[in-house]
Length: 124
Image (cartoon, rainbow, N blue to C red; front, side, top):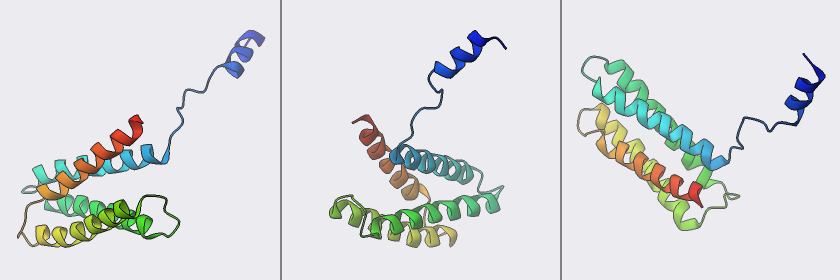
């Protein structure tokens, strides 16, 4: 490797963009939502995969609820309360989905709405 190549590498900008907490949240929710949607489409042939995807979504919302319950959370109280409510709804509705008493669609719609909100926040 030539000295010129070494110098060029040392002074070029890093290829990795700076990630914000909102970017991380968006990516996590997006991945879990896509997994849940795909698993719901295969529910009849891969019920175990569907249950696993539903469980991942429950865990996601449990983490979100824990985050907004933290006194140091800087989100407005009204938004924190709504997120906490959605986490409770997700827990209860997931049980109904597993009991074949409800559709997974409301869970997907909630996640998509949150993704839209995060996308708007990322644009600011």
